[in-house]
View 1: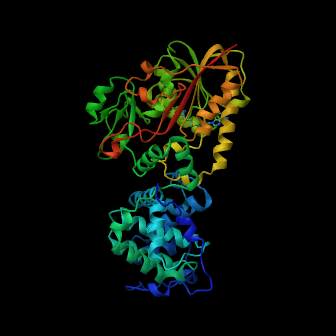
View 2: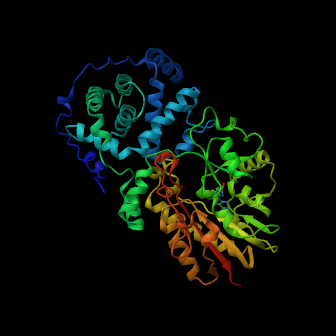
View 3: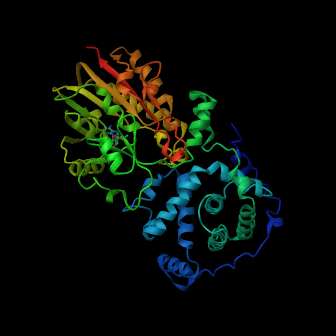
Length: 486
Ligand SMILES: C[S@@+](CC[C@H](N)C(=O)[O-])C[C@H]1O[C@@H](n2cnc3c(N)ncnc32)[C@H](O)[C@@H]1O
């Protein structure tokens, strides 16, 4: 695997040297005057600057949110939520919001490549605490290297952003010089063979999957994947209607489409829902559940609940989060499906009416969803993996008390880390209350290769290869099936 240590260079700043003097090339846009003193509110001030420098708000917002993700471990989904997102993001119109998301997705997916390319253009490393400056350069570089934005706009707006921010003003000519040099070295930068992700993650993947498979997974993480749908019925028909591809498990993989997803045929009628093909597998592995009482213990937003209902089970869906459970309810309403809903911490839930079968799709690090959520790697730490594996073991032990003797439990999550998957499952089996019920090839027709030697299910973004990377891959998922012994 290639050089993954750009961060080391960043931290070796020499304060006694006058930084970056040699790099002043090209015209640096003039510094705007600080208008705060004129008594404008923050919003008015930003509106005035935007009128003078169209596109500035988007770049400033992108740099701010990038900093919140990488320096403060804040989830990108929350920051860019359409209703409760970051205030600076909420001020933008839809077009600008989508550019912010494109910049952030690209910057995070290619973070190590961008960092290495920038480091090569710097005479000396940036100060270790210059995180705002670092994000500003990353936002500029993401546009220059990967997005369809004119180079001069990316550079000028980065320089203007630097001039406006008192922390970065003294680096404005550095920003100008480095980004201009990047525009002349694009090809070389893009061709750098860099694995993207923090060192701990790359090491963990390599240890678990071996170098070749780890590299294949990391390569796939550079692409935003296509959208998969789970359909109520007639998957081949829906694949044809929507111009998608029918996958071996019956999911429909969409190619590119015009307009909003919610405007596609069948959405309003509740004929399908969005769910990665790998995420749709665990609910199918409970066996024949027709007419049985099944508990979906961590259910929201309900993709798997819908599958269990469609399989004919009487479903009780639990979730600790009331808002997420409300979302599940509205999803089921659109699909015209019904389940008993209980908002509770399942660790506090006990019943004498034990369930025939249980699905526990546990909270996890979500490292299997990096293609869709490129912030995950930069907001999670190795400690999170250990902590979440402990939570999962606790939830699974409690699930045993809710299922009938001889009943089935399917445990799943969307982590690629074996501590939350294979290791956790083996540790629980060693406690002796559950017996393994290995998955059988005939249960995963066309996807038999996902069954491990121990009879677990393991998918990764490197599975289901396709010439077009966007049409390839699966989310990383783990699933195991157990039977309660007594
Ligand atoms: C991975 S998501 C579930 C996704 C869902 N199964 C689906 O397919 O749409 C995990 C869910 O577990 C819920 N959760 C976490 N801890 C819980 C607990 N102790 N009791 C109940 N729900 C919990 C979270 O609120 C979250 O909605």
